[in-house]
Image (cartoon, rainbow, N blue to C red; front, side, top):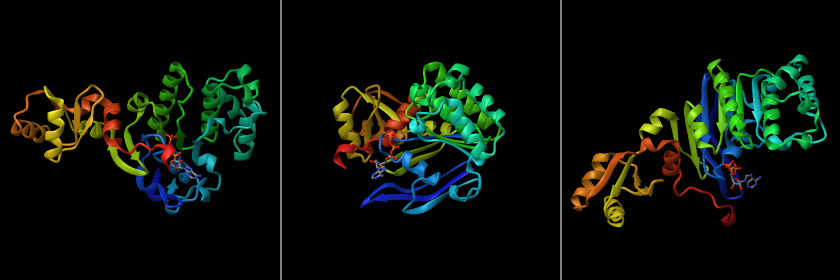
Length: 299
Ligand SMILES: Nc1ncnc2c1ncn2[C@@H]1O[C@H](COP(=O)(O)OP(=O)(O)OP(=O)(O)O)[C@@H](O)[C@H]1O
């Protein structure tokens, strides 16, 4: 179980994480989504005690991370696959972590095997690893203490398609055995395939959270008209702001009836009117985070 309550982080006057609250339950994979700079990594770092919050707090298995006596036994963390000591071999990195955590040394070979790093790879220095190999090693380290909770920041980054498919199986299996997973990723199809719940943030604030199926079912209405400009004007005037859909239509956060009525009142001919949820997670993401994308250059 992960509990995040009113977590806030300010750098100067700027709140990069702003009053964020959510829970991740045992037996579930929670997808943590947001545009670049939305505050996902900062939130995860605060949960793991690496960045002190300005206010609010987080617990893992009922306690703040820093109060866990042997954190690696409770929570497996993969925040930056490249943070490993480049001069150690993969096996050495795991052996050292096993000693620190008091884990049986035989687990080193077991976890190397689990993440698909063969004997030759395990003997190579981490500095010579590809990003995908580092991710596999990072996951082996996260799983080494057989924790009940996993926090993973972009774990599929750098993995090949087979690796992404494999990672999905590992995470699903972990959750199905009662584990709790918090997973950030920009690979929306992957998140859609593996997550049970979603937390979406934009500009540091939660813009939506809940069951994946519920969120996908309630993403508003996709509408298309013979005269798209007139449709947008009409929707604006009716107080139904629309965002551009991926397929050229407009997505409106309102019921189909309200959208249809506004169009009818303006005498517009609609060519499509349907729930936007069928556009999948990508459409949901674009709708929810429209206007919150962070442009680093203007900060
Ligand atoms: N130490 C810091 N000092 C100042 N600003 C910071 C610091 N760490 C992060 N930020 C800012 O906080 C914001 C959120 O960053 P964060 O890395 O949490 O976003 P993210 O959602 O993980 O983005 P991405 O998807 O690009 O990884 C960014 O604007 C970033 O520049």
